[in-house]
Amino acid sequence: MMNKILYCLAYAMMGLLLSALSPHSLADDARLENQLILALKIKADGQDRQAESRPVIRAYQQAAIISKKPQQRADYIDFYLLQKPASFMGHTLILLEEEYMDKYVGCCVSPGMGLMLKINADTRAVQEFANKNACTFTPHADVFDRLRMFHIDHKLPRADYAMLSCRERDTQK
Image (cartoon, rainbow, N blue to C red; front, side, top):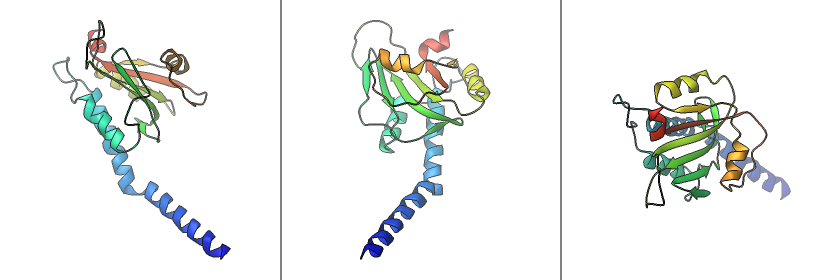
C-alpha cells in the first residue's frame, strides 16, 4: 500500500515538473515578457509608450505571477510583488509598479510602469534599453528601503538589485 502511495506521489510530481518545463510555459513566459517590453518601449514620437500598462498587469495576474490586488497602492502607484518566477532581459523580475490616476489624490501623476530586478548578469542590455526608450535605469538600487518606505512586506534575499522606470517623467529628462 505504501509503495502505491509513493508511486502516485512520484508520478504526480513528475507531471508537475514536466508541465513547468514544457515549451508551452516557456512560450507563455516569453509572451508576457514581450508584452511588458512593449509597455516600456517609447513610440517614435518620443512621448507615448507602444502599449498600455493595464493589459500587461492583467496578463501577469491571469498567469498568477502577481496577485489580483496590489500589495500596496501609494499616491498613484500600484505595487505588485511577484508570486512566481518571471524574467526580464535575463534578470529576475521581482516587482511590477504601475502608475496611473483613477481618482485625483494630489499633484504629479506620471503614468507608466516601473520594475525591480534581481541582477543575474551584465546589465548593459537593460541600460541600453533604458537609454533608447526614455527610461531611467538605477543600478545597485536599495530595494529594501523602497519596499520599507511603501510598507511592503517581502522575503527577498540580499542580492544586487536594479530599478527600471519607464514613466512619463522619464521622457522629460
